[in-house]
Image 1 (spheres, rainbow, N blue to C red):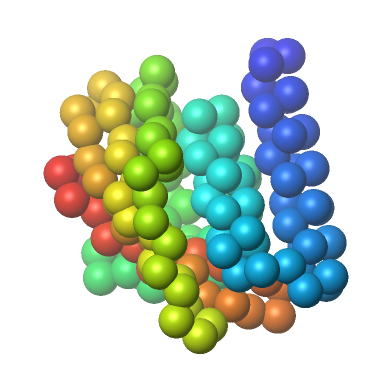
Image 2 (image 1 turned 90 degrees about the vertical axis):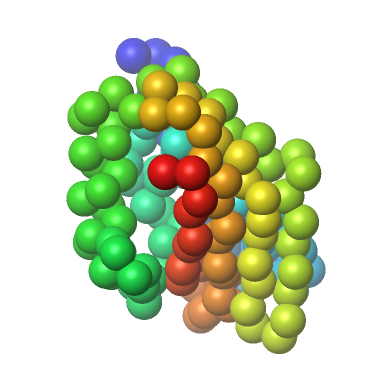
Length: 139
């Protein structure tokens, strides 16, 4: 329980630092990296609020629908134990930034469900760089 609270606190601190960085003119690569790390920390903590914090209200996906659909999907994954012992590898992830859009790929996941590779799409919004789309293979 203490570990979960510590991870949640770290994610929240990271989010606060991210928003502070956006005001000071942080480089897009750094801002996207911070959001990626916040997403990873949320996944490892199995914390739905932390997972969804970097998701934009304008998130859309061909299967999940909108942000509420993504939240429901992730909640089910947590409830079914799919994130227990999850490994998230972002070391090989490449960021491609074009204007106000960025893609980050590959994000490698492995856990009880097997393995999957994610691509996250970020868009620069008033609140900073937010996840507006994703593509998953292997799920």
